[in-house]
Image (cartoon, rainbow, N blue to C red; front, side, top):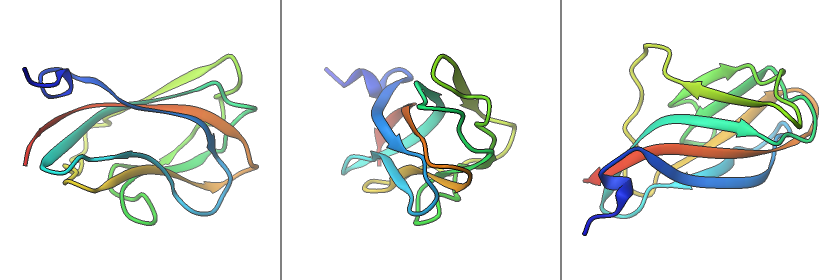
Length: 122
């Protein structure tokens, strides 16, 4: 039987205590070999404090292939934020692509980030 992640939108990954400081991209999910991946939405929650106003999501060193300039400044310890499509064309991720987040500006904080989507054969 096929994995539920290939038959429905599901939780692809949960990353705890993601370092939301400026600098390198933080990896959140790597697409399995032989698969393609469509990321449908991302939930950011359980932040150590309010997060920054400029965060990029996607693959590549600068995470520029899914959504940029995401304002997470209202996310704090008891808040959560859903990042969804804003009617633009997104990248379909290939096997071994690493989806992640890169904080562009703000103070160093941590958060939990859940990545949702589905997989299909490459």
